Image (tube, rainbow, N blue to C red; front, side):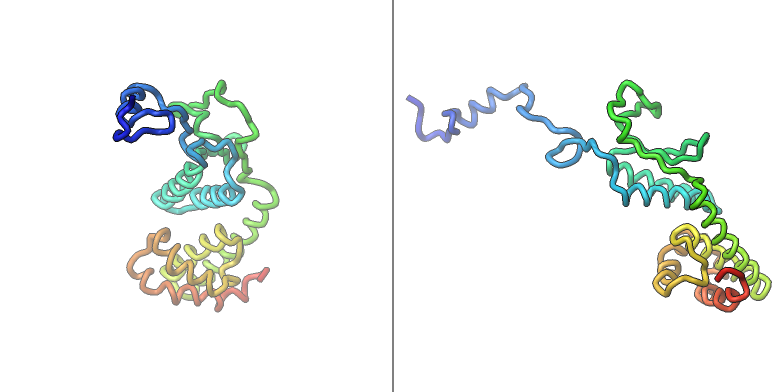
Length: 222
């Protein structure tokens, strides 16, 4: 007759008996690496993640300083990694490709691991509509940068160039069309992380941003 003083489960096993029985045995159930209940996700990244990965890729391509470009790529890679995906740019057709990291070993896609090609996401980085619009905005912004340099010198122009990079790539807008919130975002967040200014440039950046209104009216397309 079992000793009733020893705690037992609904099968009549004591804690010691359970431990002895399970030593060396695998768990009854195992999950994947991630996702709900420990299972690895089999879905593509959300649309918002894909859009942000595209934006960061474009920012990396347009960055004037390699350190800034590397920071953008690192942020992008970390973002898609949270969904168990890898990002790369396919140079032959200028396309951002996101695909599951489980397809890759030592940096090489293992085709035998690909079960559902629809999970991969491809985004053209040189689509005609987006590219044409970006070029129009960028041309106007560069004209404003040139006008600021002619009237106020190279330090102000360098700051406005950084502002133009921010507005073109983040909002696809001219610098003189920026809202107050967008100007504040540039001054408090983007400029500190990405502009790499000299001390002279940093000391006058708020004034530089205000100068775009003085010259913007003379640039066509506003």
